[in-house]
Length: 282
Image (cartoon, rainbow, N blue to C red):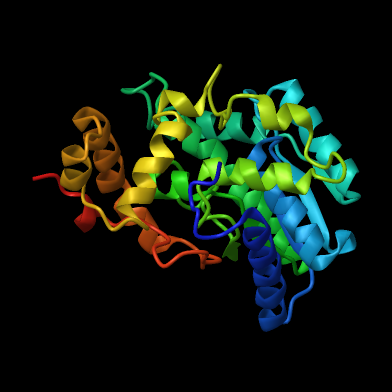
């Protein structure tokens, strides 16, 4: 079921495909590159890009780290094969470990694992993708969704990099609906991509639900704060759990600085992101 019921899944797909096509035309560009992680977001963006630009104009980079699972790499390969696009596999483990070695003296008083180690991986990937973009004159397609963007679940200068954010006005639940629509006639997005638990794979056994409420719980709250025009207090008064609303409002507030530094978004709504000022509980 779509979170954003103002549009049908067919309308969403059509608008995003046309948006990609028009953006590239306006930039005088024909080629695109994106990171293929084996996850649902990059799979949907890749499929939309092929529909908009043609398979010969879309290139995928798979950038596995120490924490990438074999099944995710296989899902990315299967997706590329299903779409008929070319791709490269560029492991980042060696580069990552060189970063950690170079920072060894700097990090000596804080050797425990933290978000810093996760973000280093994301920023290495961003650098690799931008290197391809520059070398082959291809625009980088960002693959972050609206649920992540609103709650700050993304890395500046890493997975938030790109020339255009394709699905950043689409909640995670709606990304799944779009993926099923893409697979209507034949399997393009691997079934395992659709059924596995979402994960950034930046640390062992990581799941999105470690950092965020489950998307079927998170997305309706975000929708009410965005398109619904509600405040956190409104939602509590309507019966939403206060602790849940406070948690989501806190996530939005702590990461609101990120939305001021993101690439252009293909808008599907009048409220593409939630700003901190709108999410202050009384």
